[in-house]
Image (cartoon, rainbow, N blue to C red; front, side):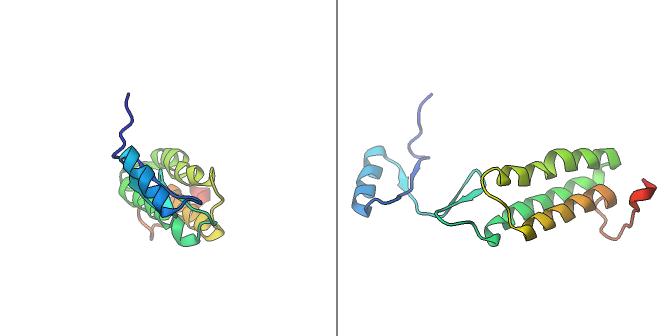
Length: 128
């Protein structure tokens, strides 16, 4: 295995731009700045804002709309347990999510489980 220096990016923390440029030329990599995303998570020196987590909500929403239409109730249960719960859990392993973001993701999980892809479909929890 070899390190691919073209894919690397140097992010400066308490270093001058001259030194950063010099190191980047030596290693043959690009330079970046904070904040940035790494593995889909926003990273920076300050606490992430609510807007930084909106891609997580949109990923949950896309999964909900695209996959729950084809699934039975048992399949939707598996989807909520494995996929929709795993996306926010991965994010919460590094930082706590804003309450509004957690509530929005919970709303998608509940809708996926009880209604399928149809928002207007009212299924009573007792009837299941």
